[in-house]
Length: 71
Image (tube, rainbow, N blue to C red; front, side):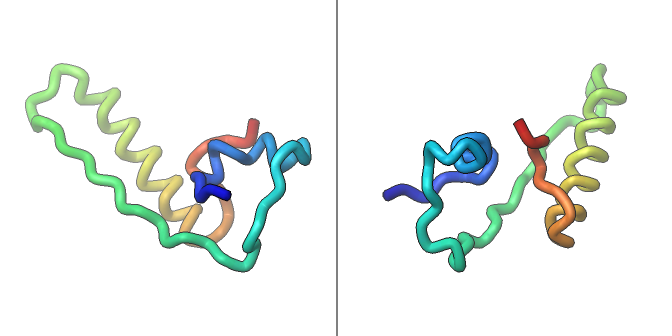
């Protein structure tokens, strides 16, 4: 028995090679921290990543999507 992130086991559960135990129990979400320099030469890439993570986080809070696309 192990507690693993959903993105790691989504495919195995869907293919029924892994069985979810304690389906009524979900571990609390862990926070994500981003630390970066303001004067980053890849600033547009960084802004795109931050925007994606903020949007995905809001959707996950509302139960609409996970941070990782389905495999």
